[in-house]
Length: 345
Image (cartoon, rainbow, N blue to C red; front, side):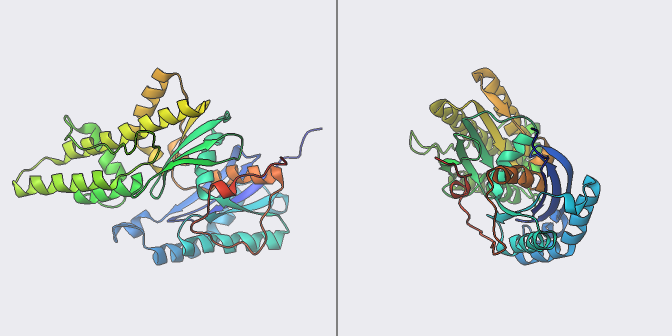
């Protein structure tokens, strides 16, 4: 007997994108709409939480209506309403949560709170099946982590950043080099065009550590920039951008490959906004091909924050019957391991 199709309307408002999507059976994206606030926050050099919340309020109703209309699924035929409950900016999260709770109540549908990073990880399942055990390299504006998934919906944190996340470091380096927010794409582009690289340190930490640290590298970049300026030199930006990117990527790739080998993982998944970085995508692809490691990298549309990834992760909870109550709250520090799908064991 064939199971009935599951249609999840998902909402994502953890930071500065307002997004809604309808996902069928956790893998088929019927609609995925995103209202970006980049132009608004660029004037401030970064995301302003209060401004982000207000922009979500302005956009959420329209985005939800358009997502349902584009999917061609009547609201009464939806199986569940999913929403990011954390981590993220508390005010931004609350806008999505209140909208999702209202819909779930009005339509009498189950509510599913989703961990934002679980969404980034399961964005890869929108492309192809994930083989377990699997290793996820999460690289975003606020997270740099290595996550082991021993089974579907199970998350074990092996390593994390001890200070700046990769995305934060990119933005700070970009600002030092004179680029606007968000600075990551500018640094990535400049690094790819540079003919030489300025030598910068690699933070390997302890020999057996899977943790990351970028504060020292960031400081080294700022020091290099100041030294060039004090000497009155021009044209140093490309070499610094390439040196910085090579330092970041070498550590990320090496630790990810080591984690795959140590855990016997069958796949490596690249996840998060910085997964759009061309240098990182290229380096991981080349290294994994040489090592014989199966690598999944989501397309650019599923790297940045989007609701389709939330719908993909929510399907795990749908299948296990783990629903949230209408008392669901925003959890800015929500634990990924704690969000793992429960088993009967």
